[in-house]
Image (tube, one colour):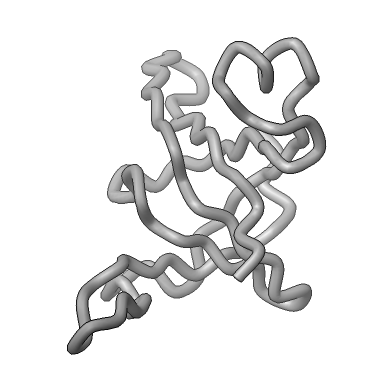
Length: 102
C-alpha cells in the first residue's frame, strides 16, 4: 500500500465552554493515503460528494472523532468511521472522513 502523505492526529476536548483539539501523543507523523469517495458510497453514508474521503493507514489508534491534519498542505479531516482489514500481506485500517471546514 502506498502511503504518500503524513498527518498529525488530534482529539477533541472541552476547554471551558468551548471544544478544542489537542495533539494525540505519539501520533504526530502518521503515514496515510487519502482518496475521495465516489458519489454512490458518499450517498450511502450520508456524506457529501467531494467532501468525504477514504483514508488508508496502518496506525491502529485513530478512531471516530479524531482530526487529522496533513503535513505541508494543512488540510484537515474529521474521522467519521473506521474499519480494520487483517490481510496477511498488508493489514491496514480504512477510515471514512469528512473535510473539516472550521
